[in-house]
Image (tube, rainbow, N blue to C red):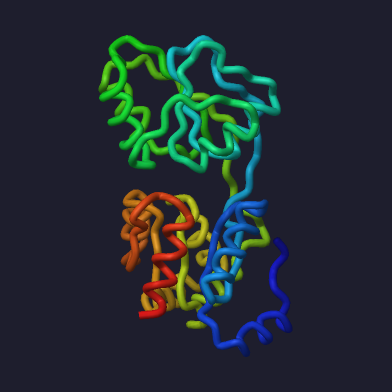
Length: 259
């Protein structure tokens, strides 16, 4: 999504609506996030801090269990013609599950808690992982919690990196607004969005001003790992979503802005 012009920014400022930043990849996920925030009565600040670079790899075949952790991973696997065969197919959450089903994969297992640790707990309770082969197909920034947890449960774990996540060079609108004190809230959807946000601030030489701006704003984190990354950058999360979905994060962050 293109950066906003000065005229657009001035027009939006005139509405008096709170400005809420969102950092989804620049595809239908960002469009959907913008639509939701608009429906919630705020001014979305779309700032795509993530872009996808496919590696050309595909998940290993013949594993007892295959875990996919994102919509992007499901689409790349399908585009490459990968088939799960007799493997038990696991999705880390309902959004990933819906994306997998949309490209033709039947999903056998979705954890109640939509996190890496939640998936490990569900697999441990519902399957005998001792000696089982588990293929984890995801981005290059996947949490070690999933691999470590599965290994600790006795599984033979292999990871395939399907894509890399990089910061688009045009990103940074929300960074500028935070630095000038004009951002009311931010919805951080992963640790990597936090890292890329502050990388952009460092390039601009506005890290201190951004920290002050975020301290004045409502900062939302999609889960505990994202909250911990914010803490590492000296930022307190005001909201940690009750479930690891953007819908919950957006609604709960906007509700905090309105208090």
